[in-house]
Image 1 (cartoon, rainbow, N blue to C red):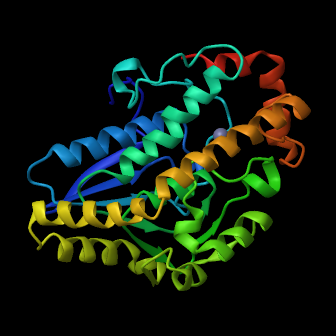
Image 2 (image 1 turned 135 degrees about the vertical axis):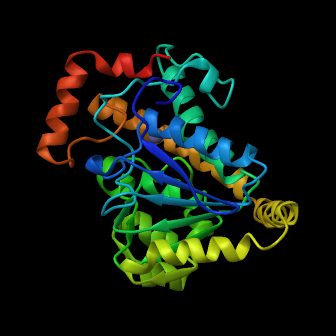
Amino acid sequence: MTKTGEPPQVRYETPAPKIAHIVLDRPQKRNAQGTLMTYHLDQALKRACEDDAISVIVLAAAGDHFSAGHDLSMSEPAMAPPEERATMWSQYGSPGWEGIYSREREVYLEMTERWRNAPKPVVAAVQGSVISGGLMLMWMADIIIAADDARFRDNTGSDMGVPGVEFFNHPFELGVRRAKQFLFTGGWLSAHAAAAAGMVNEVVPRDQLDARALELAEEIARTDRFTLKLIKDSVNAAQDAMGRKQAMQSAFANHQIGHLQNMLVHGFPIDITKLPDSVRKHLEAALAAGRDKEMAKG
Ligand code: ZN
């Protein structure tokens, strides 16, 4: 049981000396990222970083798919309790755009940034579909091992009227031209194409994914723990010197303009007209019931 009192959506294991194995464990929802998964993952990463015996973290996901993206079901609390939050942004229940903007800063942008800056190396093992918000869960890792059945897309632009997910790392993951095609079309990128673009380190057969991720983590863990932290911090600093963070802030502002445009045109922060009927009807019903306001409440 977690601090929130809910069943954990993230599993924490120590399969080998110096290795923490953190598993997204909501396979029945294709590991969709709702509030609970976000904060359970945050707690697991914090635990691994604070544990003197851990040098390297493996991030994996249960089931056939790494993550289907953000949970649009509106079935979970909008926010974690105050003591679990990562930022002091606050006012998550405010009217107008303040509440929604504040939640997106806390839950998506700054939480992913915090994970990306976790000092210990993270090796992600990804399989099946990795969609939109799921990319953020993967991109925070330092090394990505993909199963040969992995495939990636960000359809927030093509299908939902928002110009890419909040943690806008696409240009740094794919290069600018591939990033534009990826976002303009919302099309799928295969594991091998992602490897060719530099977004993933290795592609392995599906049945070897877990073993390969653990093997690589153990190889990394042979290097001194503090040295690993200094290497990671130095490479991250190089990426930041290229303007990553400033570019991401600019993209986040555009992301908010996209949400506001949808609010004005469709009465909802995303364009729901292209969503599958079942999802759209669910969201419309939730909207009618005033759940949109509840979602924004802290
Ligand atoms: Zn958003």
